[in-house]
Length: 204
Ligand code: FE
Image (cartoon, rainbow, N blue to C red; front, side):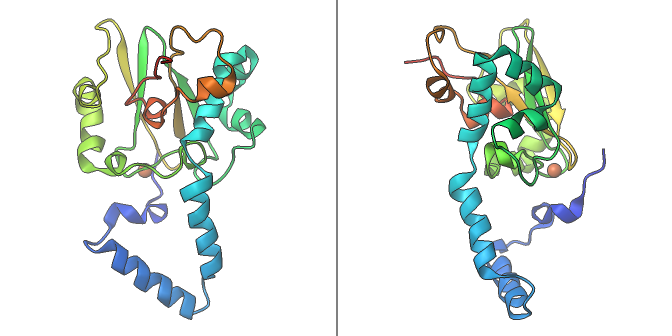
Protein backbone atom coordinates (compact mmCIF):
# COMPACT_ATOMS: atom_id res chain seq x y z
CA UNK A 1 0.00 0.00 0.00
CA UNK A 2 1.29 3.49 -0.74
CA UNK A 3 2.55 5.70 2.02
CA UNK A 4 1.35 9.24 2.29
CA UNK A 5 4.65 11.00 2.70
CA UNK A 6 3.00 14.39 3.18
CA UNK A 7 1.78 13.00 6.47
CA UNK A 8 5.30 12.02 7.53
CA UNK A 9 7.53 15.05 7.79
CA UNK A 10 9.84 13.12 10.12
CA UNK A 11 10.94 10.92 7.22
CA UNK A 12 13.17 13.73 5.97
CA UNK A 13 13.92 15.71 9.09
CA UNK A 14 16.83 18.14 8.95
CA UNK A 15 19.69 17.75 11.41
CA UNK A 16 18.35 20.42 13.75
CA UNK A 17 14.66 19.52 13.88
CA UNK A 18 13.74 21.33 17.08
CA UNK A 19 15.02 24.65 15.74
CA UNK A 20 13.31 24.17 12.38
CA UNK A 21 10.02 23.22 14.03
CA UNK A 22 10.20 26.33 16.22
CA UNK A 23 10.91 28.53 13.18
CA UNK A 24 8.06 26.93 11.28
CA UNK A 25 5.63 27.36 14.16
CA UNK A 26 6.63 31.03 14.53
CA UNK A 27 6.13 31.69 10.82
CA UNK A 28 2.80 29.86 10.62
CA UNK A 29 1.56 31.66 13.72
CA UNK A 30 2.68 35.07 12.35
CA UNK A 31 0.81 34.35 9.11
CA UNK A 32 -2.28 33.37 11.09
CA UNK A 33 -2.24 29.83 9.70
CA UNK A 34 -2.00 28.05 13.05
CA UNK A 35 -3.28 28.85 16.50
CA UNK A 36 -0.58 28.27 19.13
CA UNK A 37 -3.25 27.35 21.71
CA UNK A 38 -4.59 24.66 19.40
CA UNK A 39 -1.05 23.34 18.90
CA UNK A 40 -0.54 23.23 22.66
CA UNK A 41 -3.79 21.33 23.06
CA UNK A 42 -2.67 18.73 20.49
CA UNK A 43 0.73 18.34 22.16
CA UNK A 44 -0.89 18.02 25.57
CA UNK A 45 -3.24 15.36 24.23
CA UNK A 46 -0.46 13.20 22.87
CA UNK A 47 1.92 13.80 25.76
CA UNK A 48 -0.45 13.17 28.63
CA UNK A 49 -3.85 11.87 27.58
CA UNK A 50 -3.18 9.44 24.76
CA UNK A 51 -0.77 6.62 25.42
CA UNK A 52 -0.24 2.88 25.72
CA UNK A 53 -2.64 2.71 28.68
CA UNK A 54 -5.44 2.97 26.11
CA UNK A 55 -4.15 0.09 24.01
CA UNK A 56 -3.65 -1.91 27.20
CA UNK A 57 -7.29 -1.31 28.11
CA UNK A 58 -8.38 -2.74 24.75
CA UNK A 59 -6.14 -5.80 25.20
CA UNK A 60 -7.38 -6.41 28.74
CA UNK A 61 -10.95 -6.20 27.51
CA UNK A 62 -10.19 -8.69 24.73
CA UNK A 63 -8.66 -11.10 27.28
CA UNK A 64 -11.71 -10.80 29.53
CA UNK A 65 -14.55 -10.65 27.06
CA UNK A 66 -14.58 -13.22 24.22
CA UNK A 67 -17.24 -11.29 22.28
CA UNK A 68 -15.14 -8.12 22.40
CA UNK A 69 -12.05 -10.10 21.35
CA UNK A 70 -14.02 -11.37 18.36
CA UNK A 71 -15.07 -7.84 17.40
CA UNK A 72 -11.54 -6.55 17.89
CA UNK A 73 -10.19 -9.18 15.50
CA UNK A 74 -12.96 -8.58 12.98
CA UNK A 75 -13.03 -4.78 12.97
CA UNK A 76 -10.57 -3.25 15.39
CA UNK A 77 -11.43 0.34 14.52
CA UNK A 78 -15.07 -0.20 15.49
CA UNK A 79 -14.17 -2.25 18.59
CA UNK A 80 -11.78 0.34 20.03
CA UNK A 81 -14.39 2.95 19.19
CA UNK A 82 -16.66 1.22 21.71
CA UNK A 83 -14.05 2.14 24.34
CA UNK A 84 -14.00 5.72 23.13
CA UNK A 85 -10.61 5.26 21.46
CA UNK A 86 -10.56 7.14 18.16
CA UNK A 87 -8.46 9.73 16.43
CA UNK A 88 -5.87 10.54 13.85
CA UNK A 89 -3.72 7.63 12.67
CA UNK A 90 -6.23 5.25 14.12
CA UNK A 91 -8.82 5.31 11.37
CA UNK A 92 -8.00 1.81 10.10
CA UNK A 93 -6.64 -0.37 12.84
CA UNK A 94 -6.11 -4.09 12.42
CA UNK A 95 -5.59 -6.25 15.51
CA UNK A 96 -3.37 -9.30 15.23
CA UNK A 97 -3.33 -11.85 18.01
CA UNK A 98 -0.30 -13.72 19.30
CA UNK A 99 -0.71 -17.46 19.76
CA UNK A 100 1.64 -20.26 20.74
CA UNK A 101 2.11 -20.82 17.00
CA UNK A 102 2.62 -17.22 15.84
CA UNK A 103 4.18 -14.11 17.34
CA UNK A 104 3.29 -10.86 15.59
CA UNK A 105 5.56 -7.84 15.33
CA UNK A 106 4.88 -4.44 13.78
CA UNK A 107 7.14 -2.12 11.84
CA UNK A 108 6.77 0.66 9.31
CA UNK A 109 9.56 0.02 6.84
CA UNK A 110 9.03 3.30 4.97
CA UNK A 111 8.56 5.76 7.81
CA UNK A 112 6.87 5.44 11.18
CA UNK A 113 3.17 4.69 10.78
CA UNK A 114 1.83 3.78 14.22
CA UNK A 115 -1.58 3.50 15.92
CA UNK A 116 -1.41 6.80 17.81
CA UNK A 117 -4.84 6.66 19.51
CA UNK A 118 -3.91 3.32 21.07
CA UNK A 119 -0.22 3.76 21.83
CA UNK A 120 0.50 7.50 21.78
CA UNK A 121 3.63 8.87 20.11
CA UNK A 122 5.97 6.22 18.71
CA UNK A 123 9.26 5.62 20.55
CA UNK A 124 12.44 6.84 18.83
CA UNK A 125 13.65 3.31 18.08
CA UNK A 126 10.46 2.57 16.14
CA UNK A 127 11.37 5.38 13.74
CA UNK A 128 15.04 4.44 13.48
CA UNK A 129 16.54 3.16 10.21
CA UNK A 130 17.97 0.18 12.07
CA UNK A 131 14.65 -1.09 13.43
CA UNK A 132 12.81 -0.46 10.17
CA UNK A 133 15.33 -2.48 8.18
CA UNK A 134 16.18 -5.19 10.67
CA UNK A 135 12.66 -5.97 11.91
CA UNK A 136 11.99 -7.44 8.50
CA UNK A 137 15.39 -8.97 7.80
CA UNK A 138 16.19 -10.52 11.17
CA UNK A 139 13.16 -10.26 13.45
CA UNK A 140 14.34 -12.90 15.92
CA UNK A 141 17.63 -11.12 16.42
CA UNK A 142 15.82 -7.82 16.98
CA UNK A 143 13.47 -9.53 19.44
CA UNK A 144 16.45 -10.97 21.33
CA UNK A 145 17.83 -7.44 21.71
CA UNK A 146 14.49 -6.48 23.26
CA UNK A 147 14.94 -9.40 25.65
CA UNK A 148 12.37 -11.59 23.93
CA UNK A 149 13.34 -15.14 23.06
CA UNK A 150 10.59 -17.11 21.39
CA UNK A 151 10.26 -20.88 21.39
CA UNK A 152 11.69 -22.37 18.18
CA UNK A 153 8.30 -23.60 17.06
CA UNK A 154 6.70 -20.18 17.29
CA UNK A 155 6.77 -18.38 13.94
CA UNK A 156 7.33 -14.63 13.73
CA UNK A 157 5.03 -12.68 11.47
CA UNK A 158 6.06 -9.11 10.70
CA UNK A 159 3.42 -6.59 9.68
CA UNK A 160 4.41 -3.53 7.68
CA UNK A 161 2.24 -0.55 8.63
CA UNK A 162 1.16 2.02 6.10
CA UNK A 163 -0.63 5.32 6.09
CA UNK A 164 -3.82 3.31 5.60
CA UNK A 165 -3.45 0.44 8.06
CA UNK A 166 -2.04 0.50 11.60
CA UNK A 167 -1.60 -2.67 13.61
CA UNK A 168 -2.22 -3.55 17.23
CA UNK A 169 -0.66 -6.73 18.57
CA UNK A 170 -2.78 -8.56 21.12
CA UNK A 171 -0.15 -10.27 23.27
CA UNK A 172 -0.80 -13.66 24.80
CA UNK A 173 -2.46 -13.53 28.18
CA UNK A 174 0.12 -14.57 30.78
CA UNK A 175 -0.41 -17.62 32.94
CA UNK A 176 -1.65 -17.09 36.47
CA UNK A 177 -3.95 -14.20 35.57
CA UNK A 178 -7.27 -16.05 35.79
CA UNK A 179 -8.59 -14.10 38.74
CA UNK A 180 -7.52 -10.63 37.60
CA UNK A 181 -9.93 -7.90 36.60
CA UNK A 182 -9.42 -5.71 33.54
CA UNK A 183 -7.54 -2.99 35.41
CA UNK A 184 -5.06 -5.49 36.82
CA UNK A 185 -4.71 -7.19 33.43
CA UNK A 186 -4.09 -3.89 31.65
CA UNK A 187 -1.16 -3.21 33.98
CA UNK A 188 0.59 -6.27 32.52
CA UNK A 189 0.33 -4.98 28.94
CA UNK A 190 3.33 -2.85 27.98
CA UNK A 191 3.65 -0.63 24.94
CA UNK A 192 6.26 -2.96 23.47
CA UNK A 193 4.00 -5.99 23.91
CA UNK A 194 1.47 -4.25 21.66
CA UNK A 195 4.13 -3.55 19.00
CA UNK A 196 5.33 -7.12 19.32
CA UNK A 197 8.81 -6.29 20.55
CA UNK A 198 7.75 -7.41 24.02
CA UNK A 199 5.41 -9.86 25.68
CA UNK A 200 2.85 -9.29 28.41
CA UNK A 201 4.37 -9.61 31.88
CA UNK A 202 3.39 -12.33 34.28
CA UNK A 203 1.83 -10.95 37.49
CA UNK A 204 4.30 -10.39 40.34
FE1 FE B 1 4.95 5.09 8.01
